[in-house]
Image 1 (cartoon, rainbow, N blue to C red):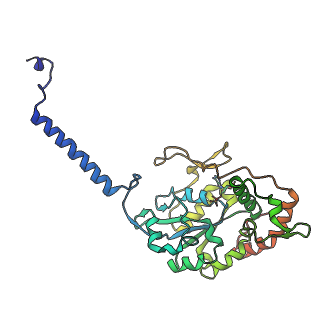
Image 2 (spheres, helix red, strand yellow; image 1 turned 90 degrees about the vertical axis):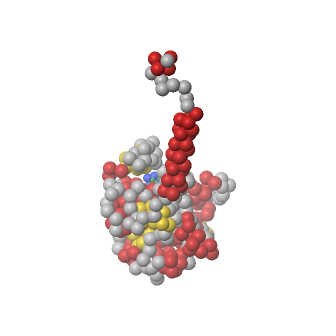
Image 3 (cartoon, rainbow, N blue to C red; image 1 turned 45 degrees about the vertical axis):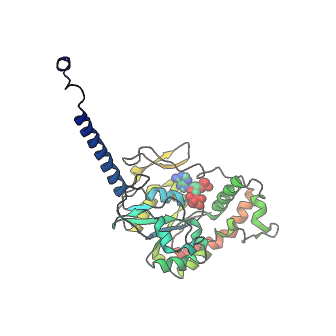
Length: 305
Ligand SMILES: Nc1ncnc2c1ncn2[C@@H]1O[C@H](COP(=O)(O)OS(=O)(=O)O)[C@@H](OP(=O)(O)O)[C@H]1O
């Protein structure tokens, strides 16, 4: 009687409680089953197939490769591997099945992409990539080789503070102006030499060059050209970027799928080590003929002074 007055259905019935428990367990199991069929452990959709990449960002180290990868993966028709697999340089022995297993799942209509900047300077990489697929689209982000070398050195110094100075490492004989081309930070910037190995396997039309400088001043413009090259609609536009004054770089705006605005991490956009201006001039002179040959080969003037 008291229960009726209070508007309750009555004391809990054992049968009703059992039914409730059953319904609850059933709904939990269904959620679990749906989740494990449709989602990966990180919650991302499990739809589609793991495929070998159809496009690669092959270089160059410190050119702006992370920015291109993070920007292009905003596109709904692109799925990218977040880490650098180093397959075509360090891990080739593990085989293509291992490489494929690292890739994100994609639908038929989506492009699989990865970036490993050291591929550009790896002698065997063009042949190995060609053997995977002669249709692979290649993206190279290039930047003034002098600034690139300083960026590279700044990164190494942040990990190994005891290394010799940039000025010391750059020359075999500074008085004679003999640049040490065996030092990786210098060698990577001799773009045209590396490009020649790629051109033995891939036509120029299959290689897209992104200007690392324009990527900072006009990210939407550069990404527009990347989307055209990949043959996907121009989804990434000005609307996706804002200039973050604190970072000093363009960052991604918040969107429906990414609720926070996103800048690249602290290791991108470091303050560079101060270098003797005379050494900078010497390196500019050193790179000039390589740059000119590079512009002629790719048919673009990057205006590196
Ligand atoms: N939007 C945005 N935000 C931050 N940084 C940007 C951006 N666009 C280009 N860059 C430039 O990218 C440089 C790092 O290049 P990478 O990503 O190729 O480096 S790495 O090879 O993967 O280590 C990094 O070099 P440093 O400035 O020398 O750190 C940046 O100048």
